[in-house]
Image 1 (spheres, rainbow over the protein chains, first blue to last red):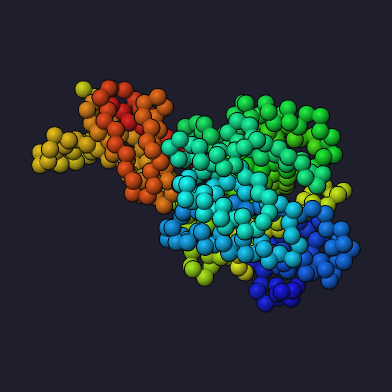
Image 2 (cartoon, chains in turn blue, brown):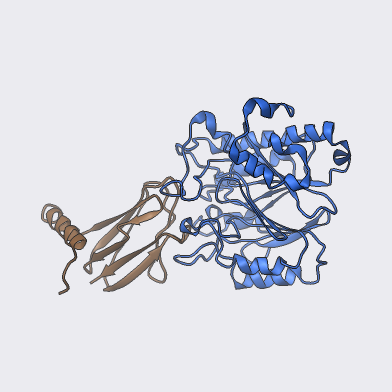
Length: 314
Length: 107
């Protein structure tokens, strides 16, 4: 795998657009889009950068373990492939975040299977729930497994590598006709959590449903997400990582970078491109190019974190 | 009695055609969930009618009318039924995808 790949594959317009967002960071991963490849390029072309790699963590999302419909009859299998991809990365990430929809139907066996596969990365994993993780009768399986030490429905914060991470829950107490919801209690906690932090502290907010309004007609946004963004406005570097929409989407607005990760289970259509946001059936040969994980690299003194989306294939 | 609009008239006729043949549950009504939409989005029924929702999507949904009724999570082809004994307007939605809303008007 090397830089010459892109000459053979051709680079789709979309890929170029995805890459352009990060052109300002000067990292040369952009043409190939894959972590192993881009690190290879960095090794050869930007030795200085490689020598100070900063902190890298991974984002995995929407594994939907238990999903077996035509869009991907074996979601557990593709999760396993994603884990294989992670284990093959030349530089071991510091940890991983999972932005929800671990399971498809919140069944105990689905949580168990997800854990069995994801634990093979031997990485610490910080989870936030998706709406699919809260649909068991008693709504307890997610919290039993991942809720320890969290507040409310499962929100929390932690520090790593000089970055302040905040995991938020926006899939509970949703209102008819509305979008994702954080709620007053969580927002008050967030305001308090950020209080007193130096404005130079890089902030990463992660939650399942996008905190920004992607496409309200499909519920792709968070009703009171703007309130959360108000609280981080004064910070120099803010990165918002989400899942839920099963496709890569990026936006930079002032000091805030928004990014959604691919699913490891099935793709969903671009906003408005289909009658509904349901699972999108693509040709078998194309499926793995639409699934994947994201790798996020943070370097001291760089305002933006570099986000690299790696498809399972292609 | 209120005039029936054309669509409601169609539903009423459908119910009338089905009703004599089967049992006492003759005026039961169906709502389908297709492509993240309740169809029909609004249904007018008489008290005593049972409405059955069927999820025909590849994604689970719920049927929730706050304070009135709440289905379990409906996986593909799962059904939920509720019998409306009191007149009134019942707004409902999918608690997983709250942009999905519907209405049952019971007279």
